[in-house]
Amino acid sequence: MWGDLLWDKQELIERHTDQNIEFVGKCRTFVGHIAQAEIEFAKRLRAIVKESSSADDDTTSTCGKVWQSVLQSVNKVAEQHEGTSTALLAQVCTPMKQIMKTKAQERQDVLKQIAKLREAQAKAIANLEKSRKKYEKHEKDAETARIHFEKLEKLESTTKKKEQEARLKWAAKAKEAEAVLRTLEDEADGVNRGRVVFYKQDLPAAYNSLQAIDESRAENLVSNLSEFAKCYKNAMTANIQAMETVQQTAQGHKKHDDSAGFATANKTSTPLPGNLPVLDKKNVKGSPKPSPSVGRKSPKGHRRQQSTGPPPEPEEDDIESAASSPEKPAMPQRQVLYDFAGSNDGELPVAASETIFVAEDDGSGWVLCAKTDGQRGYVPASYLE
Image (cartoon, rainbow, N blue to C red):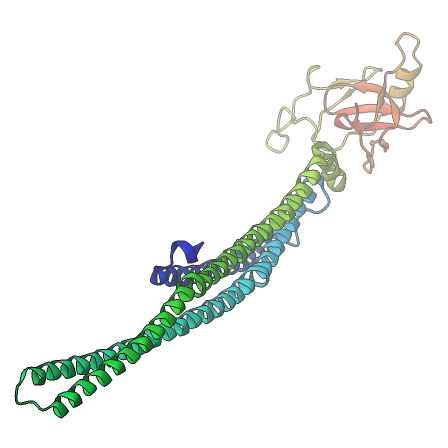
């Protein structure tokens, strides 16, 4: 194509092919910068993960596990960026460098071949020009001899001998000129045949070779740019997989389980505080007797003063009376929510999921309870259903 359509555009072809090889270098520089940026980005990601990680981080709750999955996934993303940088350098930059070197050398070889062909053409034309000048000299000598003969022929004083000599000299010069002309014609035919071969075969073939080199350069470059995209596609696929791991871990988040786990691990053994007294005994001399609305009356009519401390020891006849009195309905049953040690006097130790009887609940925060084995005492109301 180039040999037929651009036979007289060698300067344009040289500039075009040179710019295209330089373009490969431009692409290679671009990919090299991208590879460097990938390394720097990976380092930054790892630094952020390190700054955001702590030995005190929650690793047991489902929420904490999601956070750990995020950190691990970001580290995997950083690893992918490092791998992308390595792949770009090895699979894209290095081949591009080889393309530049190979195609530049191939181009240079063809241009040298064209230069030799043009040099041969120029030499043939120079020789032809010398032959032309040689013929022109012989033709001029023959013409001079003719003129001299014709002058002698017109003079009456010219002897037959001189006239004959002049005629022979003119004939000899003309014969030499004819011989040189035949040589010139043969040489011109050879030069023209060479020009036909040069312009219709050698030069087109050389230009077509430059076209093939440029097309091969472009094909290899496009292949490497496609490899560039493939490196990023692989990295993106791995990054998506890393983030999908986070999403899968997030689907296992159970907020109530986390709350229950926190409560179980840190549950208190201290009971809730009781009601506050009406008067502060430390600041009042001779406290008045509690009114019916302040105290709590037992089944036998006894009163128990409200207190902020642990509950008092329950009276035995309170429970017996509440559990066995025919006038009163059976005691309600309640299920225990949490373990309660009952380490203070008057408290009833119970276990989670245990069922007990409620003898009295006056809303003070402490419930008088009994077990089937006869044990009795107070249990925090918040520990019961």
